[in-house]
Image 1 (tube, rainbow, N blue to C red):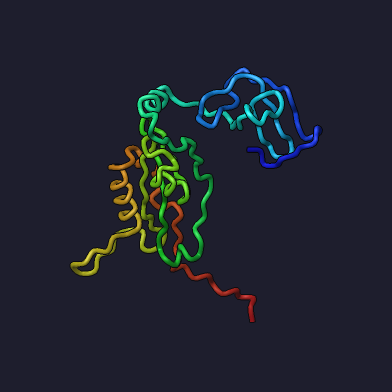
Image 2: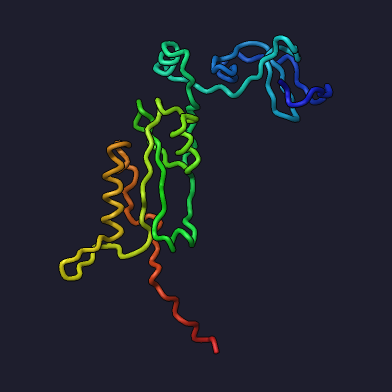
Length: 206
């Protein structure tokens, strides 16, 4: 159903045509043929103009691998989650994170490829709930230390692990669920901050 019940003529672009690889039906099948577009709402529907009985909403075409197509054909009664992942572009720990001493990082790996994405917590939990298809992606979370001693310290018979050792072990553990992650994460002091550093007093202050 369209967002609005009425659109003026200058809000509609009718009689458009796609030769494929542009739009898809709600079931994911590629659409080829006439369609129309609503400028103000960015809606795309089949048929040259609105037909209440025939028009079907279209979305941007997403290429599905032959393996996934075969899986969907053989398991047509199983709902498949989305296959689109948005990699985490930038991240900056908060002061609260530095006070805590660690952050949790999230990763997804495509099952049949070597692609590994660092993602936000929303996409990670979407994968756990199959909003992002669990049959296509494996996921893991990593406890990542960002403050403290960088190297191991020894006090008598007690050894306290440093940030580098703890993060190296975290990546090693993550390899069992996301093979290849150690090649993606090579900086074991990424996001690290020396919170023991004291800013010198400004000599110009009175």
